[in-house]
Image 1 (cartoon, rainbow, N blue to C red):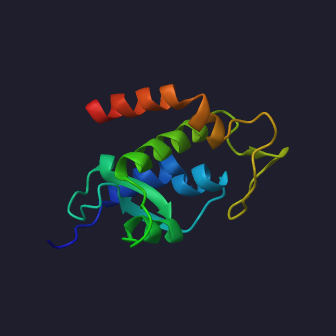
Image 2 (cartoon, rainbow, N blue to C red):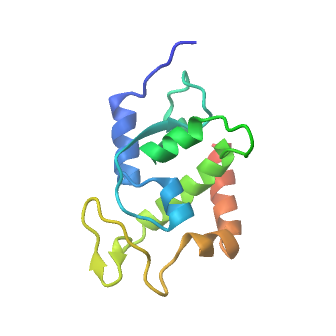
Length: 140
């Protein structure tokens, strides 16, 4: 079936909410720097152009997400939804860009300072809240 493109309105909503941060960069590399990227179809159905099916990924991770490896498991749609929710939760916190006592500038990357909430914290003791967040969004 022919590819459909996300509307400008959906692009704008996702770009603004993610602030052009890649969910996979954040969770895998603790990287909150902005990236050149694209909207990925979370369910990999190129005709599903709903807001709920859109995630901002950097170019490298979008390519990896859409690829079909022969020996390893690729990221699942549910996994990406959880990572996207984790990123949004951090972005919505009051001081999400404070890295090491300074604010990141466009294109910079950095690691979170000691005491800041990291992806690892969400993946260990924060799984229940992320799971609840995912389940409530999946049911709506």
